[in-house]
Length: 424
Ligand code: GDP
Ligand code: IMO
Ligand code: MG
Image (cartoon, rainbow, N blue to C red; front, top):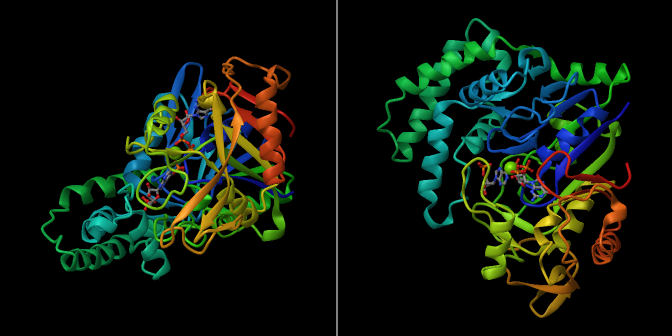
């Protein structure tokens, strides 16, 4: 068997959580492969709303197993809060969740380092989620990290103390030394004891043995391609590989074991935090999209910046990820618009290009737009593709011809039920 991958093609918050939940009944295992509690994946069903941070979005469906894969960075305190809330709502989480031993831990001092680094960057700050993501991945790559498997070893406390001492020195260099971490540390160590109650596994064996037994696996991405540390709008990115290749390194799955790649995008575009965003709208239209789409961060509550769909960036993301099927989200937000715009090319120094440039930060990018007529029909209640208005079908046809991949799923509202599967 091969794994399928579902990931974001824009700057995150495309609606990954919702669609993973919808697709889970077709799979046996859902596995997160990167990111950490910077993610906020929203699911809505039966009138209730849940936001998942580190736990895969397959957790609410019956019978599937979920894995937090080795590419993830885990904050034990936030994990405990998330897991206990799920337990309280009736999910038998200890039975259905496994955690890879090679997952790296976010320490309390990683969060302090994240904050200090942002303060020191001043106007050039990334606008991180403040969850310690960058410092935790930095420790991983510089071979200083602590992993979930270490919590089971007798010298864990010493390893923790050494990492903490090193971080305190770094904080002193960043003028952030005046910190009493005793309370934070006590809470964190309690959360480590909680974490140890879970099934801590060799994630790479778990996934590969499951594939050998014919189990179907869906890999759930966090963030989005334009936030990828290698291919996103660097340096305004997160610190992991959010692209399909990240599923290989983040789960121990070989490249020839990748099956379908579901690329998910909004019918418009959003971004939260700093960094370039060529199609951003600073006007009334941008504010209308934000209001209608409730575009506020699921984790931080920050306003999301809004703009028109960017097909240059999307084509780039499709190429890097090897997308085989597209999923379009939140088209209902545009239901009332007379005209909808799509950026089909960039104009840079007077020259038009359909390619994504080295940097969209250093150059002035002028989006070249195509205007399309709006469908002016509420779509939230539709149950079948046959009900789609003609102008909406034209919009889909236009996107498919620009992107060269079929749109397999259209989402027309936040609820599980508001999902139209065109072909799968
Ligand atoms: P994720 O991080 O990719 O899982 O996405 P988020 O959960 O951060 O943001 C997506 C937001 O849009 C959430 O509030 C969802 O409930 C909501 N949402 C998802 N799909 C749709 C849709 O098709 N229409 C509307 N109106 N809202 C949606
Ligand atoms: P989901 O999985 C949207 C953004 C932050 C910031 C940059 C770096 O819900 O789509 P970090 O804390 O990772 O160091 O922040 O990345 N960012 C996200 N934006 N959705 C996310 O996750 C994000 N995770 C990080 O706003 O610009
Ligand atoms: Mg989100």
